[in-house]
Length: 211
Image 1 (tube, rainbow, N blue to C red):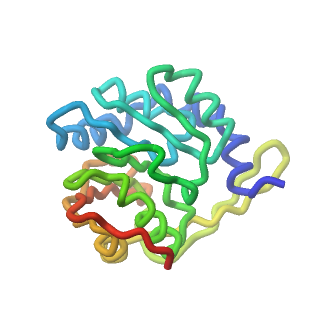
Image 2 (cartoon, rainbow, N blue to C red; image 1 turned 45 degrees about the vertical axis):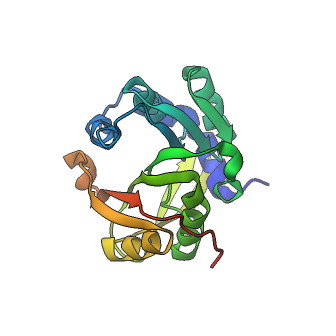
């Protein structure tokens, strides 16, 4: 049986696609992120879902590789974005076969990871980011965790969402060779819902350790 989180995102893939392809709330955030690159960047869209922000990243001048563990989401992403590359993959199975990236764009893709898992993931991703490359994360701000309850197709899902603040993220990213650069711009509607955007920059070769 599929993991509950994976099953939930398979079920809502079409729903998310219909909501977010027309919605450009993250376009200013994407513009700001792409302003850090002088040439056409190669970006990893981490947890790309059905590819709505991959579409915008590509349209604004990036070469995009998207990964997500939801097979249904990746099917939609591939159908809608033939000029991007997509893979169905568990974050923790990512390896250097994906090649090197100038940056990583992560919108809402770490919210189900606890502190230990996030530190492990950043360690896995660090060697894939070129030195002086960038890592932008959009996440739920706060401390601790919360349970979000959803019902879809007569199934009930209790999903744990982990919250992070700047101190915790600085510590995690610093251990893996990234420095905090700035808080990125984010639409007020998202800020009011306790979302934040932080941008980190690769400063060293990083390490790949399981903690």
